[in-house]
Image 1 (cartoon, rainbow, N blue to C red):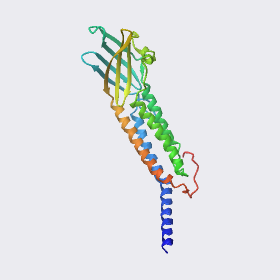
Image 2 (cartoon, one colour):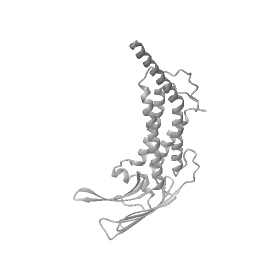
Image 3 (spheres, rainbow, N blue to C red):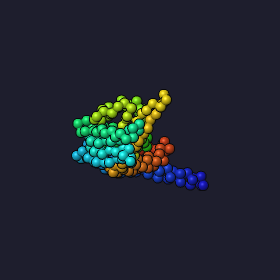
Image 4 (spheres, rainbow, N blue to C red):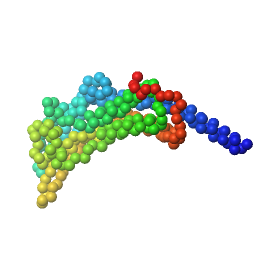
Length: 271
């Protein structure tokens, strides 16, 4: 008798799990994907470039970055994913009384590739969700995990593009196409670099000198906070968290390899 009751309980538990599994696949996954999609579209609207039909005109922001006392000072206009204008002045390390001035003008802007990279990855994440039809019935937890893996991967790459600038050698910086945006051009022993790190726009000034046969690099950094970048990073993080929560829930069912969906799936074509 005890064995029979125990077996019945196990069958009932398995049946309940099966029902919950199907409800999650057919209902909750779509609800969660819709919520994630809304978050990512909001994120796209914050970008200063045309992205996923945000219909935004190219945004323009002005910033001042400086290192006192007048060691480095920049007046910058950020338009879309480029610095369209900059007035840059700095002191020479080898001649502290000498000020150098250079500029960037709109007909030869300085491209911030990090913004475009992040936008591309965000758009790819949204497309991964768009590829799932509203009425499509998932067949297995592995199928959902595959889609979530694609979305998570795109979001992680997009967020990393903004938070972690690519490491470049001094030679890379000297030969950078962006250095040609400066007018007048700087000598090869002076290098300027603009990049994003988290919600900040940073300008780095490197002055190279030869000290008894050894290369010496004096650097100065100035930064400012970019409001829309902070909003974008928050929405990237929320999207990642929602994806991970759904993934964790699906992983609970993925251990039950004998689970199958009893209803026949519809075509995966988007509706």
